[in-house]
Length: 514
Image 1 (cartoon, helix red, strand yellow):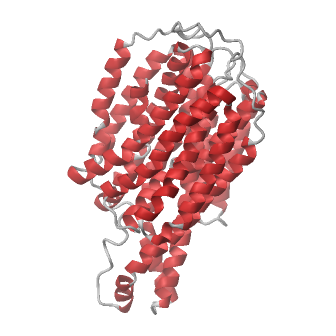
Image 2: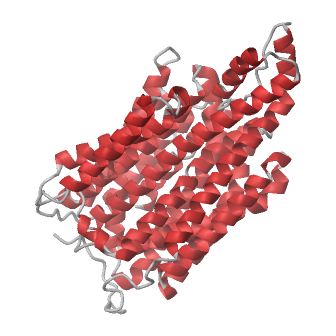
Image 3: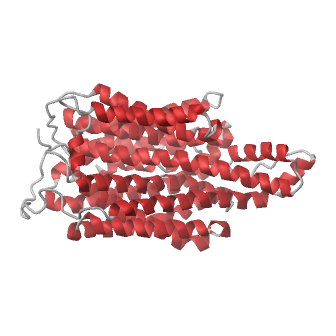
C-alpha cells in the first residue's frame, strides 16, 4: 500500500521542479502554472471524502485498483499535452483527473493498513506509513530534476506508468480481502463539498487577477464557504452521510484536524515556492533545486519517526506542540535568510522547518484515524485528507497571490529607481511577475529602448526582489504553524478510544469489518 500511494505523493512535488520548463515550452502564465499545480491538490481535497466513503462501501481493494487506473491514465494524458493554445486547459483538466485518482487511492490504501494492524501496533505502523509515504515526496524533486535535465519535462508524468504497473501487481499478490459495508453513497453531499471547495479556492487563486476589491473574488470565496456550510447542515440528515459529523464531538479529533490544516498550509506549498525561488533567485538548475529541497526532507524524515515514537509513548499532544514550535521557528529563520542568496547558508533552517512538519503529520493523522467511529477508517481518513489537501490548495492560492503582489511592487520600485516611468514600470513588473514561475532572469527584454536597457541592467536586483517577495510567503508559513500551536496546546492529551483496552498479544492480521 505504501508503494501504491508513492506516486500520489511524488506528484505533489515533481511538477514544481519542471514548472520553469513547462512554462517556457507551453507559454503558460504564472497564474496558469499555479493552477496546474493547484488543480491536483484541489481535486484531492474535493474528492477525498468520496474516496473514503467508496472504500467503505465497495471494499478497499477495488477502490485501490480503480484509483490507480484513473491516476495512471491521467498521467499519460498530462505527458501528451499538445504544444498549442489548449495546453493550459489540457494540463489543468488532466491534473485534476490525477487528483481524483489519488483521492480514490489513498484512503482505500490507508483503510487496508488500519484493518491489518491491531490498535496497539497501529500507532507505529501508521507512523511508518505516513512517514515513509510522506518522505516519498522528496523523490519528486530529485526525479523531476533528473528527468527534466536528461530527457523531457513530459517524463515527470510518464514515470507514473511503471510505478502503477508494479503497484497493481503487488496489490494482486497481497490477496487483500474486500468486505463491503452496507449503506448508500451520499451523492448530494459529495457534490456540495466539491463545489464549496472549488469556489472558495478559485476566489483565493484569482484574487490577484481580479483584485481583492472585486465582487467576483468575494463571491467565490464567500459563496464557496457558504456551500460548505450547507454541506455541514445537510450531512446531519441522510441515514448514510458522506461524513459522519459525530466524530467531531471528540475534542482530540477536532484538534488533530485543526493542526493538520495549519501545517498543510505550509507543507505542500513550500515545495513549489522554494523550488522556484532556487531557480530564479539562486539561478539553480532543476537538479540543484531538487537537492535544495532535500535539506527540508532530511529534517522531515528524522522527525517523522521520532514523532511516531512520541505518539506511542505519550500520545499526540507532545508531538503536536513540539512540531508546531519547531516548524514556526524554522520557517521564520529560513525566511530571514532568503535574501542572502546562498543555498549553503539556508540548509539548517530548511531542515528545521522540515523537522517541525515531520513531528506533526504522522502523530496527528494517526491519532485522528484511531478515533474512527466503528470500522469506518476510510471515512475518517477521507475527513483528515480532505482537510489536509484543502489547506494545501488554499496555501498555494493565498501565498501565490501574496508572492505575485509583493514581487510586482518590488520590481516597480527597482525600475523606477533606474529612471523607468511609473506606468511603464508597472507593465514590465507585471509581465515579469507573470513569468516568474519560469526562469525570470533567463529571457531579459530585447530592444534598445531605455526601459529595456534598464530592465536588463536590473535583472540582478530583480532576483533579490523575488527573494524578498518569498520572505513574505515563508513568514506566512511560520505564522500558520504558530496558529497551529495555539490549537495543539488545547489537545486533551488522552489516548484514542480502545488503546488502553488493546491486547498486546493480538497480532493477527485483520480484514476490514463488514
